[in-house]
Image (cartoon, rainbow, N blue to C red; front, side, top):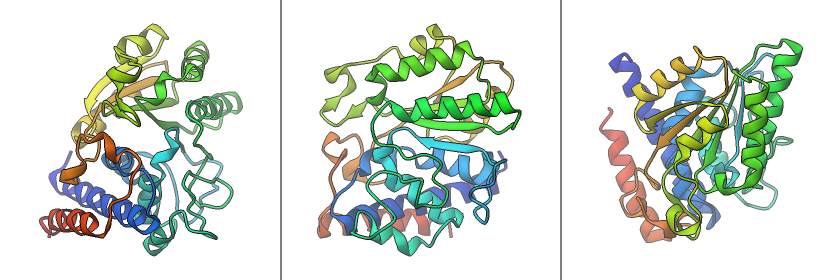
Length: 278
């Protein structure tokens, strides 16, 4: 990837992380850890990979994105705001009464949201349905989804995976956010789905494992995905809470908002990272 463009993406991801922290702090609730871990993936999808137009969010020819781990909505909202679907100022209304930005994505009211999600396992299932529709009607759009590594403990995920393989949904790419933490502890402590790569392979998917914070790796994986005639699972090894020192690899930040003091610390770190690009 050209260095200048990579720097541009890194800067955008930093702004996405700032939007995540601002929104969760304003709401005094939310899920910062698993939102911060997917900033690079969302940034690449929305600013490089997907065929989308913020001025025409319902374009029938657009690529679709489903946030299967719907509790990471602050990351999706911050990305959509940066991409121009709505003003970044609206992020401060997260989870407020009357706000469009609910705790989980709402396709009926938020421009750019293709599917309402929150009940784990259902997002990947609807993404499979979208991909099947695209194939059946010859619409030629691609479908992308992000699942949590805790989410894939849900049986419905594997029913969807089996169906996608049987229907040869080569237009479907699923990122698995492998940050190794879920709400109650590590995935090994709770109910490990490892080896994740071998499981998806056994269900007939093409599997690629990458560093989920590396743009070159994300780019190469998505390019490889276009060369195979089957659904693709990109196992993205990430750091939960990435970008905020005290949140990194800390399970207690799965679903908690920083107080004013810790908010100031997070914003100081993220603004310093952003300033380094200028």
